[in-house]
Image 1: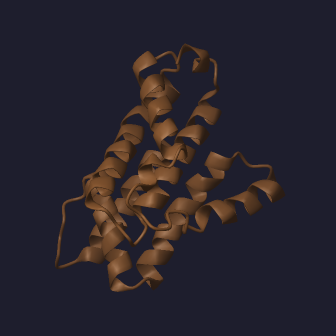
Image 2: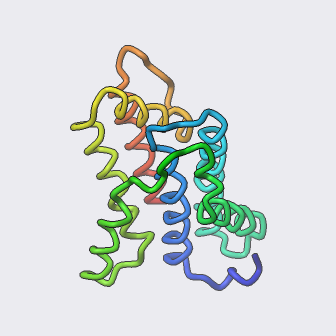
Length: 167
């Protein structure tokens, strides 16, 4: 972790968003596994907790170590266990195009793509897909569940996600 102390705030934030994206993509797959959902949610919550700490306190060993561990799990497919096809999210493919055209850091582009994709799912997805986004909101951003208004839960999750991304 000490070797990452000199990484800029921008690149730390971008890398944190990429770690989040790789796990979140797998979490949102329809062929869920309860154990893997919990593993993904724990990984995502770790990134949510330690990302802003690492950005604002670059020499915080604990934050850097936790992010490195989360990044290892996110990128080595451990967060895919129990899922048939974990790479179905369109965010990465779209973002690669954006990065190529506008010379954008990958994680920064994903920070734009992820909330937009969630909004697309909320507005155009089926009931199960919207419920999955609501579950993401509840599991990761601790939005209170409301079975009478699942869409509101999902929207609040996206709002909190955007606040976190800005941090």
